[in-house]
Image 1 (cartoon, one colour):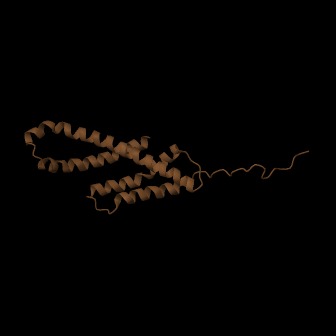
Image 2: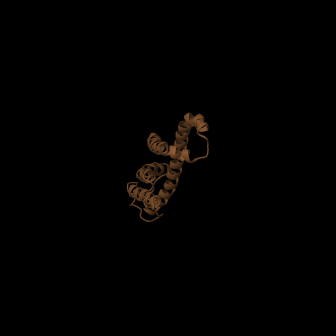
Length: 152
C-alpha cells in the first residue's frame, strides 16, 4: 500500500508542476479582476495539490480494481489459482508503466496516439505474464478413478 501512495504522490507532484506552470496562462484568460485573484492565490496552489492527490489516488484505485477483475478472468483462462487481493496487488504494479505513459502524454501535450488504449494493453500484458507465476489449478479428482491396492 505504501508503494501506491508514494507512486501516486510522485505522479501528483509532476502533474501539479505542470498545473503550476500553465495556471498563469489559464488565470490570465479569465475575466476575474487581478485584485480578486491575489486574494485566492495563497489558497489556490495548496488546494489544487490536495485535490490532485485525492483524485489521482481514487482514480488509481479504481483502475487497479478494474484491472484485478480482468486479472481474475486471465487466471481462469490460464488455468491458475489466485485470489482477488493478490491480483489487485499485481494490477497495482502492472499499472505503473501505463500510468507513467499517460503522465508523459499529458505533460508533453497529448502527442501519443491511442495512449489510453496502449496503457491498458500494457497493463493486461503484464498481468497475463504475471499470471504465469501463479500456482496451477489442482487436478480434479474423479470418484473411483484409481484406487491403490489395499495392504494386507
